[in-house]
Image (cartoon, rainbow, N blue to C red; front, top):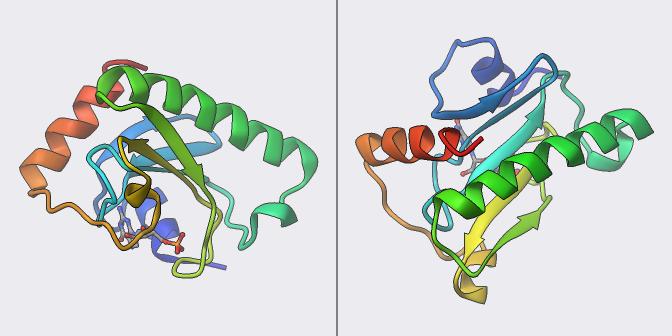
Length: 129
Ligand code: 5GP
């Protein structure tokens, strides 16, 4: 099923990309819980995480782990939180959120970032990968 994330993969709408390989893409969330909030997605669209086959699931987790390790280095935080929700966009995505406070995992806590700040942050994280 094509979603807004498919349009990002296909380059039809812009995103601040952090990492990419043949099968996965990481980019900044447009409405971040915290600075550096990153989404990791498989390029093949599947709605629900646990509908991925075993190999695709493991590969997504490995890709997300690599991005999270770089994110932790790039963005000062106590730790990187991970969440999978998908109620808004039905295309599997792993949220990676640099955390200093539990409120940043609530999805009610949002930070305002300009396009320039998002672009800088994406490039900064990418430099740690
Ligand atoms: P969920 O589906 O896990 O509930 O949330 C979807 C997430 O995708 C939200 O955090 C939302 O801000 C983000 N999002 C929705 N549309 C776009 C978009 O067009 N670009 C980017 N970069 N993020 C988006």
